[in-house]
Image 1 (cartoon, helix red, strand yellow):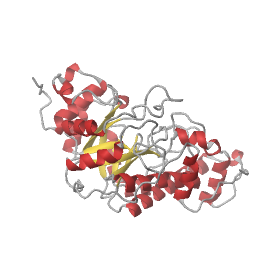
Image 2 (image 1 turned 180 degrees about the horizontal axis):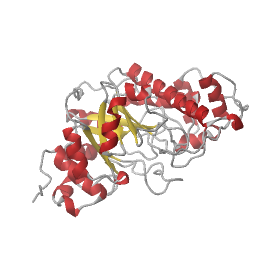
Image 3 (image 1 turned 60 degrees about the vertical axis):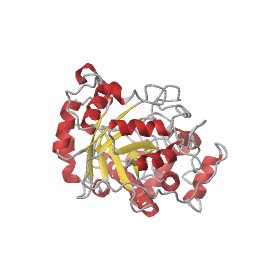
Length: 386
C-alpha cells in the first residue's frame, strides 16, 4: 500500500470480507433474525443490568483474553444466571476485544472452538424471560485488527490503539450491522470510544502515523502541516472530530439496521475534553458512567439528551462502595450495572453463593454482586438466605 493511502471497497461487507478472509473461511448469516417475542422497551422501568465479562484473561498477547478462551460458554446457563440475579438487561458480547465474535455465521470470525451459537441463542432465551440483550463492541481496541492492519494501528496493547480511519469505521459498522441482523440483539454496547493512547486523561500526544495524517486532511479540511506544527489546541480539535465521525457512523448504521436498536455507550471519564459537550452525549440512548462515582453521575446529566438514560457501574476497578452507589442510583432514577470476569470456567458462582453470605463478609466483585442481587430482587441488604 502506498504511503498515506487507505484501500477503498465497494461496501462495508466487501471490506470486512477481505479483512476477515485471511483468518479462515466463514459464512454470511441470514439478513434478519429479529425475535417476535422481544420484550417491550424499558421506557419507565429501572435498568438492572450485568455482564459476565469475556474481555480479560490470561493467555493472550496482551491483557485481553486469548481467542477461544471460554469458547465452551453455555448460553442457557448464562441466561439462567442473569435471571436468578434479577436482571432485565444482559450485556453480552458480539465481538470482544480480542477481535473474534461470539456468534456463528457472521462476517467476523467466531471465537476459535465456539461450542454454541452463543449470542444468538442467548438472545432467544433471554427474550422468553423478558430480558433485553446488548452486544458488546470495543471501538478503540481490537487485537485482531491491530495484527491484520499494523499500518492502521498503534500496535496491539490492551489500551485504545486504533485511529478512526474510514477503513476501520467501515469494518466496525459492518460488524455492528451484521450482529444486529444475525443475532436479534436489542442494542449495542460501545466501549472505549477513545483515540489511541489511554482511557483516562491526561492523554499522550498522538503519534501522527500515516493514516492519521490522511484523517487530518479529511477532518480538518486542510493538508497535514507536519508533526512539529500540531499544537495542543489543533490536536484536541482533531481528537474530538475523530470521535464524532466514528460516533455518527455507528449511530446511523445501528438505527438504519434496526430503528429500535438501543445504543448504550460506556465511558470511564464522561468529563473528558474529548467528549464533553459532544453531540454523542446528547444523542446516545443510554450512557454508563463506568467510573461509578456519584459526583460524575450527577454532574453530567446536563450534558445528556432529554431522552438519554443514565446508568452507573459497580466493578472492582472503580473501587466504589455498592452500599452507597445503589441507594443513590435508585433515588436518582439512575440504572444499575455491574461486570466481573468469570470465576468458574465461563461462569460466576451460583447466585445463591452471594445471597447466603452477609454482604460485609464479601469484598470487591463478590460484594458488588451480592448487593446487586439483593437490590434487583427487592431484598433488604441485611438479607441472608438460609
